[in-house]
Image (tube, rainbow, N blue to C red):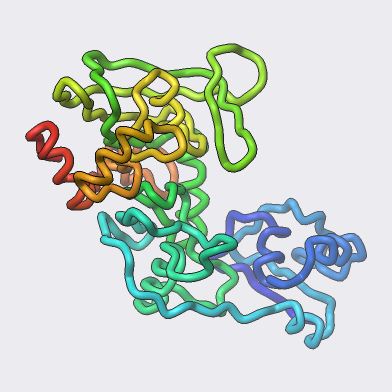
Length: 321
């Protein structure tokens, strides 16, 4: 039998989620089977798995030490060169500037040098991440590989839970800058039904019915008679939402190979060496008045674009960002 006493760092999460982290190679079916058979108890009582853990709670695993260790794989940290700039950091969170071309998480084709790897190694090197702990620091929002800008990460469980709540309840305003084809003189809103298709492609429909409702606000900053520099605010959050929304109203984003204008993209590639869409997560404003991150309420964090993007903006609009 092994007893685990819940510390302050691990309170506030469901028992089953904690067990899946502690016995990190055990199948879910095994965890729930052990709960049903009373081989896992919470405070000496039968547990269902959906209980919320409190500091000082006792979890008893009535399993052999060999079985427990068999289901515990030691976490490792990949030595990774830091591939991000720090926008803001405190004991709870890290806000960083993800470069264009860097994946947030690994995929089938790219297993290493991700932003997640870099953040974990950074925190591990500082002594703020212990691989023996059940908790792993976590990134709480995502950006496409070819979109740069603000990424948030929680350094402890309470911060991760709160960041997830903030994004889920839309208690943070996320702004982007982009350059689109055509001239836009007035601010506006794009809304409709988001429909996901095969091949990681999506579309926007004006009609009701199937799909999730999405809403995107935009405001022109400058134009040169051919292209417009915009600030865009996401009111909902779907993959490729800004790219789809601007293409939907006839103003595709420059450099967007999925939803953009191929002729315009070629011009910008030839003239500026552009190989990605000109879309940048530039600003985030927190509006959470309660919770462990309430001290961020009303605070805005700004993230500058890369030099190539700055040069395009200056060349087209003689405008600084």
